[in-house]
Image (tube, rainbow, N blue to C red):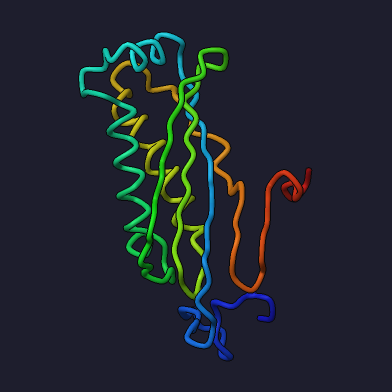
Length: 165
């Protein structure tokens, strides 16, 4: 299948061989949103969730998730990340927790999957910590915002609308 690099000449799934690629600085930023009831967001903001500090635990979970990406996503390369930053912010106007993650390294392959995994794991942690009071939360808008480095260069969601938009 042309265009898909995770298949060999016989059509079998393989990990892409990146040994001939040059090492470059690579970054990726991803985002996700957790929508919830106003009361749930208020509990998070006031530190009233029984399981503890939701935002701090979710931040740590996102960082840990980025580091475990090759254990979760088949055919992802194990990477030596040099930086993982996960930010969570509360938006009372939307009853939402917004999650962003930026992953960096100097290597032969990109870190998009690590950034996407980080925001997803952080969002799932928010859900897990708050599900006792709000099982109707929705995790939405998981997306890549920006990537830089490597052969394909720079890409940004602001200048590249999603397919079908």
